[in-house]
Image (tube, rainbow, N blue to C red):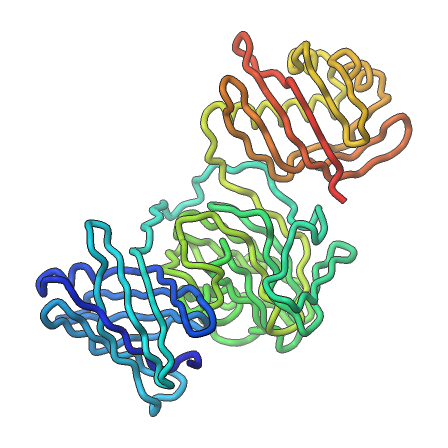
Length: 432
C-alpha cells in the first residue's frame, strides 16, 4: 500500500449512543502491515452537527478523513487520497476493546487490497502551561562523545563527525541519539544546501522541518514548522548554504521554536506525532532524531538542556555537585573539605585512586588543576539513604603538568550527614 492510498477500517461492539463519545479524541496508533509495523495517529473531533478528523499514516503528514457516520455501535469514515483525488478513497468500520480502558482495534484494507492490523489507545494529555516556566538542569553536548552517542536508523549510515560538524553523505539514513529526553530545551545550528531537506524529531516523534525555504510563505511543511501539525507565524529561514540556528523549547505538548533569533512558534500545542516517527508512545521520553535519508545536511553545536524533574534529594545533590565543581576550579580546599566524606574513594579515569587527604592535597597544591569541569548529562536516584549519580562529565585541566581535555562517564555516591551532602565515591572512565 502506498502512502495516501485508501484504507478500510472495521469496528463494532459498542452501544450506539456510546460510540460518538468514545471515538472523539486523539488516538496513538500502531499499524502492522504485511511486511512491517509503524506508528500512526488518528484525530476525531466534533464539527458542526457532525464529526471530522485526520489520519496520520507512517509517512507524509496527517490528512483529512470525511463522512464519519455512526450506526448501531459502528462507525464509518472515508480517507480521501490527497495526492490523487480521483483514486479510490478509504471506507472505515471498527470496534473498541473490552473493559474500562479505551482501546481501538481494526483491520485496514488498502486500495491495493493489502490488509493492515491497527491498534490504538487514547493519546495522553501531556498537560503543560504555555510558558517557559520549567526548571532546567545542565546542558548536554550531544556531539561531545562523538558518534558513540548516536545510532543510525537504517543500514545506510552516511554520517560523519569532523571538526565539530555532523554531516551525512547520500545515501544515508536518520541518526538517533542514544540519550532520551522528556521536556527540554534544544539549541543547534544547521547548514541547509540548496534544495536541502531534513528534520529535527523531538522525542523521536514530532518533526520540526528543516528545508531550503528562503522567501516562501510560512507553512507547517516549511522551515521551522512542525510537519503537518503547527504552522509558524512567519518564515525566518536564512539562505541556503549559511549556518542557521534553532532554539526549541518542548514541554508537555507545547513547543516554542526560535529560528535565527525570531520566535516563529510560541508554545503552540503539537496535536500528535508526525510522519516518520519512531513510535507513537507520546508519554514516554524519546531521543533526538535527525533526518538524513532525504538530502545531504550539516549540523553543529547540538546542546540539549533537560528539564529538572528530580526529587528534593536528587535536586540538592545536583546543586551540590555544581558547587563542588566550582570549588575544584578555584582550588578551594576549605569548601572541598566539607564536601568530601572521610571515607572518600576518588577513582580517576587513568586508574589513580585517591583518598580524601590525597585529593585535597592534589587540588590544593596545583598538581591537579581544573580549567573547567561540569556535567554533560547526569541523572540521580535515591538508593536507601544515599543518592547515586550516573552520566557524563566534561573535564579540562592538567595533571602533574600534563594537559587533559576529556569526556568522562561517571558514577557517584552521595550521603547526607548532619544536614550536609558529602561525596563518598567517584568512579570515572574516559569516553573514547
